[in-house]
Length: 116
Image (tube, rainbow, N blue to C red; front, side):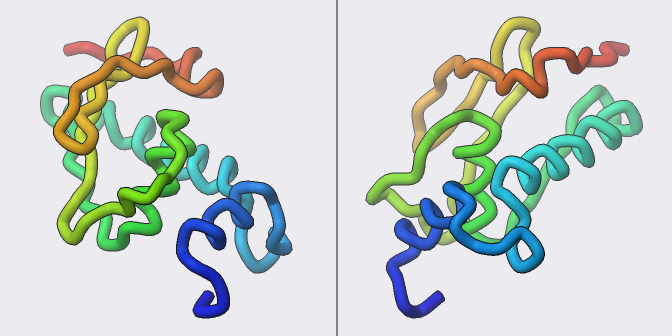
């Protein structure tokens, strides 16, 4: 991983450049993480979960895999991250100090929020 800059490695991963037995596909990685969230959401108080991710690499992967936001020259800062909430027709996302509505990936669209 020291051979290339972070952004280049990330795009190589996203394109399936690395063998899946060494690096699972980015899409599969993001889908598995989302499934963990969905499975825990019904157990969470008031349908809320706080997630603390320890590495910028994972934050970048979820920004891209969950919200379709490609990484750019603004690599995630130390203690940086995002906040999101699942709305009925979109995801409400706070990212880099900006709040915006983003489309949910097709594999999230059939999920239903269990409102209490």
